[in-house]
Length: 289
Image (cartoon, rainbow, N blue to C red; front, side, top):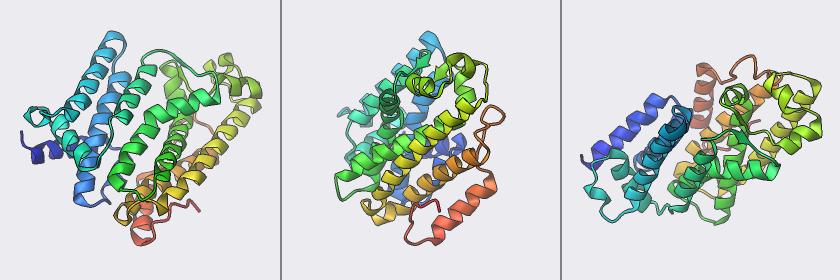
């Protein structure tokens, strides 16, 4: 398999996943877009390993994903017949992406292989850094940045996006025995694990959810500083990712955090309006206002 075919494979995997990230990637120049597809195709292998499999089977699939990224960094990566190894190997060299975020994402995925209980807000931040901040670091290398502060802000954006996902997916994660709401926060608001298991929407539940939403907003506010630090040809992609998830958080709030009743998401028409808004906004500002 040649490099062009490998990148096309990754592009196809990204398109078929139906992720909101795809809208943003389409706004990048071709070379950066292909690199993002490679990152996404590899990260999907990690997600699918722990979401579609259990026990030893999940461990085996995650180990395969780990070997793939390691092979991409090997000197002989071009000898591989695996499309993700080829595309990822080219992307990490082209954009100088370090190995550390890949290793940390694998570490975060291993957390999801067992029942998840997080003790503190610091534990939640650490988890978000592993499963989302790492992807932010990969992306910001592809975007190109002018100041090392961009690395910290990319982590902040990862935390904002992941907390948004956690609020949206509360019911789905609970069914998988994963509770990402910190136990100390639950205790502070008087909401127990038994309440959560019974999906009780008490005043304590809504207070807990509002507190997490406010925390996510604080991370979004800090992450907005990233816009002035990345290369101009990446601004629309960054803005699309930022605005889409920030609006999703708004919608979760507007629906009164009724996440046990439905999986709250942006409709196709809402996403299309956001795409056109970003395309017509030459400054590509990430504000949700």
